[in-house]
Length: 111
Image (cartoon, rainbow, N blue to C red):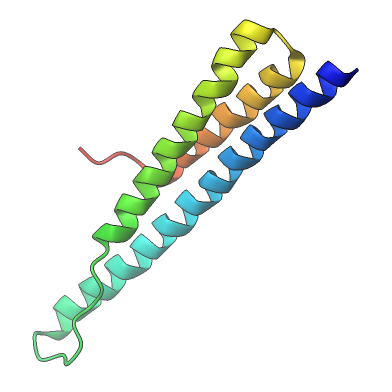
C-alpha cells in the first residue's frame, strides 16, 4: 500500500508538470501569434509609427522550450514505467505523451 501511494504521488507530479508545461506552451504560442499580428499591422501602417512593435520571436522560443520540456519530462515516466512496472507510471506516461503530442501540434516545428 505504501509503495502504491509513493509511486502514484510521484507519477502524479510528473503528469501535473507535463500539463503545466503544455499550458505554458499554448500561452506563449498565443502571445507569439498576437505579437506577429501586431508586427504585420505595424509594417502595413508604415515606418512613421512612434512605437516599434514587440518582436514575436522570444514568444516562439519560449513556446518551443516549453514543448521540449514536456518531452523531457515524459522521459522519466518512460524509464520508470519500464523499470518499476507500476501502473501509476504507465498512466503518467500516457498523460505526458498526450501532453507532448498536443504541445507539438499547437506550437509546431520551424525548420
